[in-house]
Length: 165
Image (cartoon, rainbow, N blue to C red; front, top):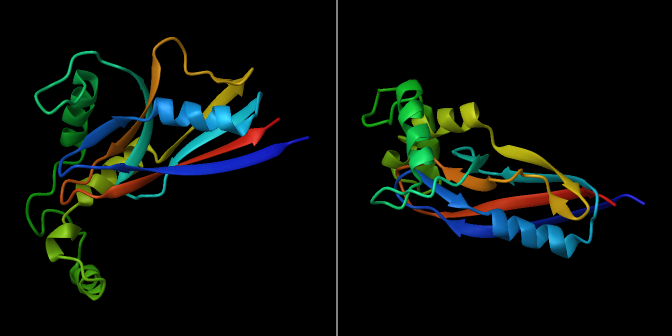
């Protein structure tokens, strides 16, 4: 009989792009689910965040960012440069700023167009097969939650859904 389980957990981002290894938290969800064979979905509900599968780099920079993730940021910086000034991108426009003010947001919080574009490029979720109760990530695979938003630190939600038996 097919079963479906869902859990979520919170992580904190910083005021710079962050990559948090959430593999162990997701493994714990898989273990609690009791599902032995199925499909696991790890998803970001945030439009400036992504879920990535990659190996751990071992080396980190002064901020604690894996070298491989910093290399990814360097590539993304060329594709979607960090939003530094109003008008650099069409978004946010005046209507968006006005709507944000109605939600008690600072106008500068909308200067995160680069984060939205990076999230679209990288994707907001990953599907992983579960076989014999274990994720099939490969020998070096890790699950990272990437937050590309640089305008403020905040709490983020990682969603995990499993379908199987």
